[in-house]
Structure formats: structure tokens, C-alpha cells
Picture 1 (tube, rainbow, N blue to C red):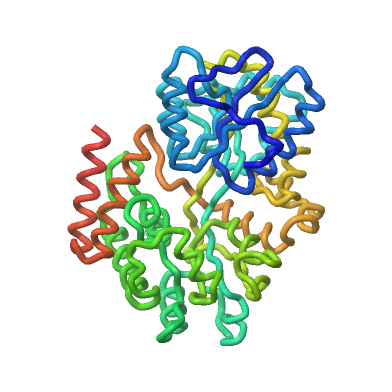
Picture 2 (picture 1 turned 180 degrees about the horizontal axis):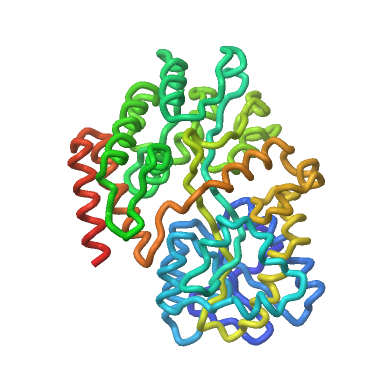
Length: 404
């Protein structure tokens, strides 16, 4: 945690008038937000901003505890997109429509449409985009160039490409089949590539239909042919280490990993500068988003919005991204000054293409539960504990039970 951020001492602490408490995940973007907030408090000396930054796994329980209390411990929360409908329907979030409409120059329409749509529930807006973590295809471009390989645009091309790159001690794909969230997050890109979905337009569960079966069969085939041995329980960290250390040529992962991999003196060492970002094979990616939200039981909603609208405004959003933050506004993605000061035109154009056709991992009032149900069954299939059809049938039954 940085020295320039205040810290909330305990969950039970309610902010006083002129003071707002903010809970955030402790990631590099948090450091940028905390640094920029020094300017906000200098310009608004009557408002104190306290940050409680922590690992992702600790956030949900703290937010729920605060939301169920008579007075909020947190005035501003960061909402992961699977939580959005659940929190909105439970009454934990303040609708922001009137605040947005009354804020001159805020330009809500500038937010990337696929991101803004996530926070609209029942016709009301409950959050504004902060941080995207859409998935893309990250490749070792030097290897592709050396071998004269094209970037794969279909799942079939990807399967053959990564299989051809695999040798005794080098692997075509670092995959993330870890039980639960990670395997579902990765595999759903394969589902999209086969034209599949969790539900049809009438809300019927179709996660065990032929498209889903093909997607899981392809995923397992690729894992067996091109992923490192003994990686069936790998998550994000292990896959990233394989790529950054030169043991694997590709990974389907968060777009913001490209700048981290290419950073001079960073995790990839001498390999920095050799990585490129592309749309996932098939074109449609799993979309992740953190949004700024204001708690319904906050006693400092106006001050909370003053901060949220400032940190997410067009001007400050541009500066945050130029400092290395994740873009969520169309104007920022297309700004040559951001390209120059940030990570280059190619990165932001690739990201714009990813965001243009991307959709959340799961939606609805019990999205978290659905992810766990499906991710458990996918893992069982990858590990050979269940057949593909059996695992997907069990996933469908689990999702149907959860939706009753």
C-alpha cells in the first residue's frame, strides 16, 4: 500500500461528514488512482478520501457487511461485473442517473458501450466504468515472425498453431484450467468462438448443447497437445510465469498484461518488447469490468459522487490511462497523446477491437454462483474425472437449480 493513501481502520468505521471511504482492489491502477486523488483533495479540502485497498478475495465479504449495516462503512465501492445485478437488485447501490445528468461535461456516452451496458440494471445506472480486464490473445511475436506464422483468427487455427509450436521443453499455450473462475473465464472464449452461450434468448440453459460440447472438446484437446504438463490446476499467475519466463508462446489473458510483459526491466526480463496483443480467436472475448459505485446506505452520497465523477471524468480518465491505467472511454482509446505517453498505438487499437465485440463472463442476480458451478464441472472434464457431455449436463442442471 502506498504512503499517499489513507486507510480505513476497520469495517465498522462509518465516514463522517466531509469524509468518504473507498474500498478497492490493490492492483497497479489503484496506485495511480491514489496518486491522482491528491489533486482532488487539494482542490476539495472539505472532502477527505480514505482508501481501503486489499486483495480481490477479501473485498466481497467486506462490501456485503457494509451494505447490510444501517450506516455504510464504505461510501464508494468497486463493483466486479458479476456482482452488478445482484447488488443492484438487493438495494445495495445508489442509482446514478440523476447525478450523471446533473454533471456538466461528464459525457457518459463516451464510455465504451460494452462496458457501460454492464452497469445498467432495470433501466437505471448503478455504476460508471473504471477498469476493464477484457481478455485478448497475447503472443510472442518474435517467435511467430521467426517461423512465419500468422496470428490465428479462428479456434481451429489457434489449435493447430500452438500444437505446432510445442516441443519437449517449450509449449504453444499457457492455459488456466484452475477449478472455478479461471477455467470458465478462459473456456468461455472458446464457447463464443463456436457460437455458444450460457442461455438462449428465452433464458433457457444451453450450456450443454452441441456448440458447448465442441468448445470443451477443443479446449481439452488443446490443453493436452500444447499446454505444459501438470498444469491442470494452473490459474493466472502460473500461466503468466510460463509466458514471461520464455516457456510458452501464447496465452489468453487480460489485455493489461501486455504492458506488464513489455515493461523494460519488468517481469519478462530480456524478452520485454517481444509480446503483442490481438483479438481472441473467433473474435468475441470475455469482458471483465470494475465499476465505481456508491452505496445506498452511505451518508455522504453527494461527496462520493463528487469524487467518482472527478476520477472518471474525461480529463482525469485520459491522465490516468497516460500514467498506465486501463482505458474505459472511447475518446481515451483513440487519443494519439495517450498512445504516445502510454503503451503505443498498436496496443490501444487492439484493445478497442477487443472491446467492440465482448461480453461479460456471467450476468444475473446469481452470477457468482453460476461461475462456480460451471467452473467446477469444466475442471472435472479437463482432469478426466467426467466426460465432456456428462460435465456439461451436470453444469446445466446446476445452473437451472441456481436459477429457480
